[in-house]
Amino acid sequence: MHDPTVGLAALRMEMAQELTEGILAYWETHALDLERGGFVGQIVHPHHVVPQAHRGGILTARILWTYAAAHEATGQATYRTHADRAYHYLTRPLWDHEFGGVYWMVDADGHPCDTRKHIYAQAFALYGLSAYHQATGHVESLDRARALFELIERYAADAEHGGYAEAFSRHWRPLADARLSVKDQDVAKSMNTHLHLIEAYTALLRVWPDPHLRARLTTLVDDFLAHIVNAETGHLHLFFEADWTPTSATVSYGHDIEASWLLLEADEVLQRADPQLHAAALRLARVTLHRGRDADGALFYETHADGSTDTDRHWWPQAEAVVGFLSAYQQTADPDFLHAALATWRFIRTHLVDPVHGEWFWCVDQDGVTCPGQDKVGPWKGPYHNGRACLEAMRRADLLLALHPLD
Image (cartoon, rainbow, N blue to C red):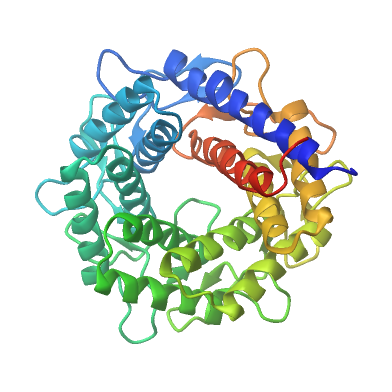
């Protein structure tokens, strides 16, 4: 590629189209529950709606974030309408009006069926509420975001070792089993929860410049660099004991590249320009570039302690790769990062975008065959990773093209 602006302009145009005509149009067409409110809880590939599926707090918060961010970026009134729908569902059926916080899950009729208060879910609720306030100026959403911040700090902050505990009962008592999913380890702390707390606190600090919040985000970022970023390998540790002793040697390439740009975003909002953070973020991007990609531009899923690699191409690591590689290109002007971002997008467009129904497949294998029986919509499958990738690619391409406009 001799002229990077050509690739950037094409990427910007194609991802804007995918956002509006592919991802968001799919959710508006297929996922609204006009009878019971909110959004349906599950649609299984290729297009099997499960009307009685439970509705998750994480999914609803991610929908709220996506439509709020899309409304802010485009000004489209329909996106505000869908953000309103997600906000009402998150703050009515999914909100614990007695003890505070967001339930893990309600049934299809909106009755609580899993009242756990996992900090990961609270973080996404805070993230969505902050974006909704930023996009609309809605006062109550900021009040709720601040209340969530106070609950997280009151119950989950580890005063002895730093960082945050993982999961609590409805009454905010610590749970013995803190796993996010059955494939996770049951441990005291996880990379995943801390990464998404950084994401959420960064979003809240944008709209609420509170000194205590600023101090807590600063400490959280410092703990992430000290304990979660592996100084020897450049990857992330995934699971820990309470004192930050790592308990897993698995490498998650999607989280490595996602963290590379979320850390820089936090540093930008904190206005620290921390050289240690910038070096760590760039190293995360480089190790992903050199160790986590296949020849077709796709990210592998993960590599295990025994050296074996899960080569399936899940939708969300590919989405994060486009953003993370663009971010690294902005930091370095290294064309290898831009090539990687464009190659990953080509892979997504060719193999993961559903040309029939819209949205993205959960994953394809190394031969490009769609993984069977997976969700198009579900507790872990929303419009957030891919919608955000489109929005970030559009924003970053605009910044880069403003520096080097097309002739």
